[in-house]
Length: 378
Image (cartoon, rainbow, N blue to C red):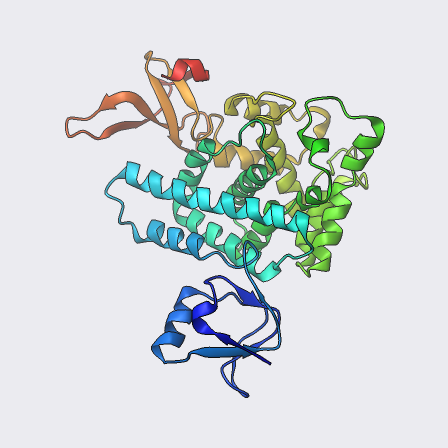
């Protein structure tokens, strides 16, 4: 075995073989990330070295200590006001998207993927969403990739959050929620094995290029299976383009053969794609995106999952800027699950006597007239 100095082991790194304190005592199993607490405890007890027959690995495949720290700050509730809480949520979201960008980049360049570490990071998002799910929906609109950037990481994170939102509405258990979140984050991982020019181009693809793109579900399934992700997670990479009317791909499955997670992710990633900019199209506003999904043209999506989407986001999704019936401009801040047509809004440019922002529920008397365009917001 090789000796490694504690001070040289970065937080979040892991080893490919068990780590020992001495010849007999196992400190950690393979691919268990070195958390900051573990390293601090070892130093406190005057352990200076550990031993392993494996090799240390670092980077995006380890459990991310910065993500855990940002989550802890959100849970602590030390923000002075709502704006401070939004700022903390924004930082947490940014760190997770950066982690996902690194994950996709390094997966594309190598054949490494730490299933345990990815799952732990997704579990952190799930725990944050238990308390602050509306905040993450609000801040995600600030994380659009630039036109010339790879949008896959942003799509993965937003699809994961949307899938988890629907999972809460469907009252899935914690274990299933973490599994669903992991599947949603990695559903397009097969794209990392294709040339970026195929999905970043503004031009029409040739028939052969289109056939190549259609292989990404199979590539993703094989990739996740090779790294021993749970079968339901692997299956979502394969099935997320299947449709209720059997018009999907790659297997043209009928509705009763498509897994529940895949049905959820199909709705989440379709809505996300509709409402985000792509190199080849402009985004629709979130209200129009919801209405397009509800049309369910060709009966592509499961009606129960579509209902969960609407109950999770409302007809006017969180973050949307809208014009009210009193002529005021507002931003949607929260959802009323009992009445998706009347969300809670913050009226722009108005404060109370003590300087707080004016946040009110909409109703039949104070209703939303329409979404605002970007040019109308300010």
